Length: 155
Image (cartoon, helix red, strand yellow):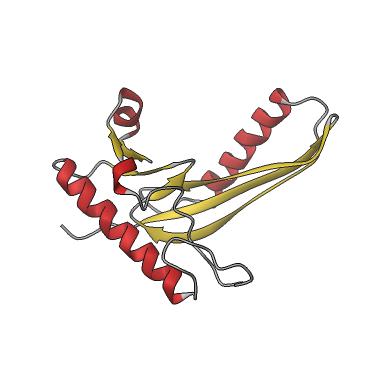
């Protein structure tokens, strides 16, 4: 099965609040097809609403999005997800192994070690958050993942 690649975008929000200056967050979202500018902006607007509801006296709120790459797996906090296009867990693992190999090669090409950033090297580097350790992998097909049409590998 040929790897299917999907557009991945990075979203970022920064703000000040009464008790904490220079607060911020960022996250990646993978889409089944290229999203419209309207869709991308609606994600930022939704987060802005959450931010203003969750934190006190938010000021200087700024947000943006940027295209990252077309890839088969998307990084979140200590896991990766993709869309559920697989027959079985062996296909899932094969796909994830291929992804990890591509990212290790990416790091090497940019003058880093396979899974380690070289301090002072300004070239891009991919952080695995433990994904390079196969013993950490736990394929999740929970109700939440199934409802979203995704498969997650926790690591």
